[in-house]
Image (tube, rainbow, N blue to C red; front, side, top):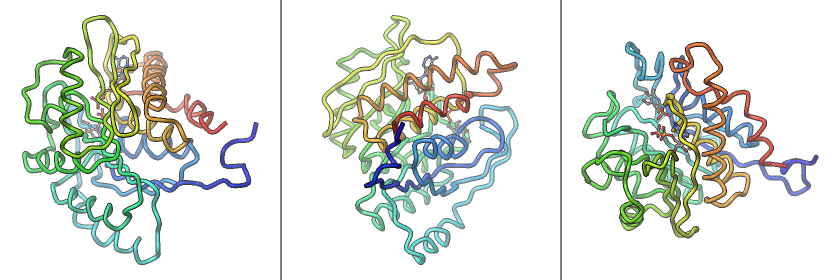
Amino acid sequence: MTNLYEREDAYIPRVAAIHDLCGYGKCSLGVAIPVLSAAGCDVCPVPTGLFSSHTAFPGWYMHDTTDILGDYLAAWAGIGVELDAVYSGFLGAPEQVDIIKQVWETYPKALRVVDPVMADHGKVYPTYTPQLVEAMGTLANGADILTPNLTEAAIILGREWQGADVDEPTVREMILELRERGAKNVVLKGIEHGDGLIHNYVWGDAIDFTETTNAKLPYMLHGTGDVFASTLLAAVMAGRDLAEATAFAADFTADAMLISAKQPNFEDRGVSFEPLLGKVTALLG
Ligand SMILES: Nc1ncnc2c1ncn2[C@@H]1O[C@H](COP(=O)(O)OP(=O)(O)O)[C@@H](O)[C@H]1O
Ligand SMILES: Cc1ncc(COP(=O)(O)O)c(C=O)c1O
């Protein structure tokens, strides 16, 4: 079978992945690099921090890389690196938001994908200061594709978090408000209506209001947000529209969760997506 990039007119897109690098646990660059590479993209990492492990573990070490990022990116500009997409996720300091906005200015044609990683289940992650949370909200407003969970959407909109079970009119209202603030297309994820399903909703300039559903598995794993956002972008880069990409990402994440459950201590290991990377490459077929 010929894949997309074996064709005569093949063009390999280049994606800057602006995320932390985590030694143990499944998240961030440790997910974005293999997933987007499996989709045939040229992935250029910009590490926002170095972590010994995902912060879901009780003890972790963090090194904030903010101080090196200016020189790091200036050196890219100096050698003429071109980008087709800028995918940002977990950040270490509010200054990193300004740095990402500068990257957007340097590469005005690049697709801006913002996963506003900062909170879940009504709680802000431990490394996120109020200043960083506020700055993340301003980044969200400039996204071409924004992928918040319900907690992150509520924070950006200054709404009180009322649990994962919000009705569809509220979902529409929230997405509309995020779009009015500037995000062009929004994927609002991880919503429950007490029907045993997880619902993801997509709406934007490029796509009508669409819902995808998956059976809710009876456990949560760290890394699912990053697997979801990375596989969604992989599908977009492979030419899928945002509704198809959302369905692909939701199915892939659920399948990876099922595989994970076969591993010892799987709730510690996080989501094991590696055996399924062939499904990402199959997007190119
Ligand atoms: N328990 C689950 N069962 C099925 N799918 C899940 C489950 N947990 C997460 N997912 C899928 O992964 C997506 C992102 O996961 P989630 O944990 O909500 O992200 P985040 O880490 O950003 O909060 C969800 O929207 C859903 O499609
Ligand atoms: C270091 C680190 N990276 C990334 C994430 C995002 O992880 P998830 O995909 O579980 O939302 C987290 C969340 O706490 C984290 O601690």
